[in-house]
Image (cartoon, rainbow, N blue to C red; front, top):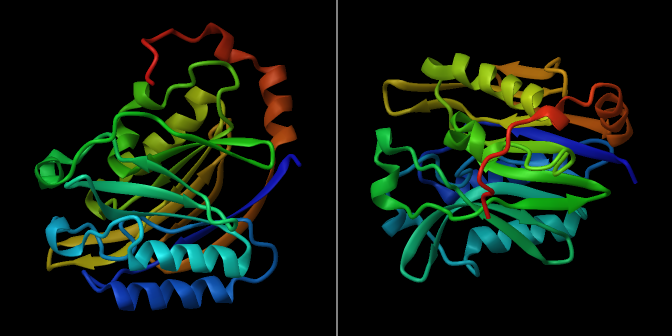
Length: 260
C-alpha cells in the first residue's frame, strides 16, 4: 500500500482546440506501457493558458470533464489536469483529480497570474486540497502557486507526502520553476512533481517543459526538457518515512496561520 506509480505526460498543446488536445492525450494515455495509477496532464491541457473562459470554459458536466471520467474508468487510473470551469457564473482554473469510480476531487488555483491578467478573468480558490490514495497524501497545486511557499507549507510533520504542480511555465522563467520545485521538496521533506508543457504560444512565448520529480532531499529523480515525453515511476512511501525519521527537521518548523 505504500507504493504509488505516477505517470507524467509532457506535451505540446494546440491553442484553444479542445478536440485536438483531447485526441492527443487520449493517444498518449493509450500508449503508456506497464502499470498506470496516477496520470498527470499539464495546466489547462485542453486549451492552453487562454484568457478566454467566456468562450472555452465548461461546467462540471461538460465534454472535457466527461472525457476525463471516461479515460479514468477505461484505464482504471486517477487522471489529473486543470481545465477552465464555469460554476455559479464564475470561472475557475480548476485542477481535477478524477477517479475511476467516477468521483472527482478538485482544487481551484489560489494564486492567479496577474502579470498575464488571469485575475481579471478567473476567480481565485479559497482553500488547499489534499487527496489520499494508497496511503499517500498529495497536495494539489497549479503553476503560479509554486512561488508562494507559505501556502504550500506543511502544517504538521506528516500532513502530506508529495506536492503536485501542473503548469504552463515559460522557458524564459524556467530557472525559477526548477529552483522552486526543488526548494518545496527540501523545505517540506516531501516529493515534488511538476508537469509542464512544451511548445510556442503566439510568436514569443516558448515552453521547454522541464517536467520534474524531486526527492525529499532535493535530488533530481527526473527532469525532461524540450521534447514531448511520457515518464512513469513507482515511488515508495516507506523510503520517505525512513528519511523523515532519521532527519526530523519538520519538528523545528515555524508555525503560520492555518489555511483552511
